[in-house]
Amino acid sequence: MDSLDDFAAAKLAALDRGGLRRALAETARGALYVERNGRRLLSFSCNDYLNFTQNPQIKAAAIAAIERHGVGSGASRLVTGNHPLYAELEARLARLKDTEASCVFGSGFLANAGIIPALIGPDDLVLLDELSHACLWAGARLSRAGVLAYRHNDVGHAAELLRQHRGRHPRALIGTDGVFSMDGDLAPLVELGRLARQHDAWLLSDDAHGIGVVGGGRGSTFAGAAPADVPLQMGTLSKAIGGYGGYLCASRRVIDLMANRARSLIYSTGLPPATLAAAIAALDLIARDPDLVARPLAKARTFTRKAGLPEAQSPIVPIVLGSATAALAASRRLEQEGFLVVAIRPPTVPQGTARLRFAFTAGHPDAEIERLADLVRERVHA
Ligand SMILES: Cc1ncc(COP(=O)(O)O)c(C=O)c1O
Image (cartoon, rainbow, N blue to C red; front, side):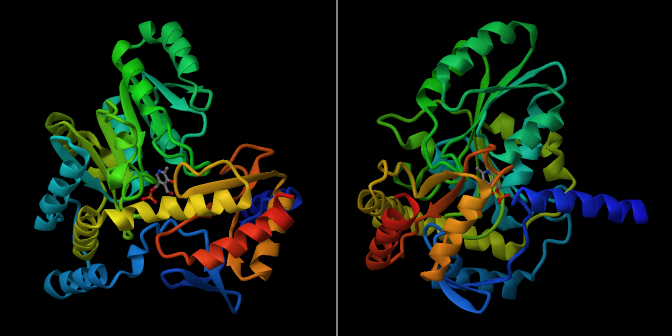
């Protein structure tokens, strides 16, 4: 066992030297405030954009589902874990995203790890935005296809790569975040959709940070004047939806294929019924309350205006500080003032772009946002 522990110790020491070692910090959460290291902090580091993790109606739906159906699903969806609540949730997701069908996975990560290899194989081509989320990269690599990165949001570069490489591969897929998880900007989905059609490539958009908060709650495909042409709309139920799980919205045939080919769906236990009931209740609230849906972005824009930053495009606002140590120091300064804004460091973001990442939610008090913006202007961004 010595070589194993030696290996782990050497890796950890290297991370320490670069200011890149991470630790799991125990954090008790409410809707807005967290408790960490014995302190109560207003969190700007939760993706709970609509504060649904603590919403009384959603909690009641989950509790009722536990009382009625128990805590677990008991098996993979293809065995006996396909609870009737799945059909209701999948119908609602498909309606929201205007697709024929949808399929719910165990998580967003599991969705991308299953979707891409179900569609794409070793002879094929995957083109990813260079800032795509780790699970798009994981799915692409699991497919064993040739994987190329195009420069962030650079449709011209994606076109050039397709011109050079598309002809050598039977199938091609373009993958991108819809709302970029660490940058908060939106992908040019209309242009990417057009490019994908021209080259018979399949566009997959990861809308983890779009559903519930942009495009009137329908996500980044719907954020422009007209919906983008995105045949594979993937996302998660763990952020604005407040619970857990991932999904793909697509044509009926593609969804049927998932149940036959997506290994992360086939060989993983179905979600607990309470999680399905919570997501259904969350989607109901999103459909009924457009004002609530608009609030996280409005709050982010209040912040960017007051802090003198470029206008927020989504509820996520980054301030890139460069080194990991600078980002950690800025995070500690804000923590001293009662705010939790976790430093984001490589490899989550590229080398030299460590940052503070602010996530705004519907319930953040304006007065606190203004105090935070003042602090940022004076002490972080000065
Ligand atoms: C863009 C993006 N895609 C996918 C995921 C993974 O989703 P989940 O947390 O449901 O696994 C995340 C969240 O971490 C994300 O930010």
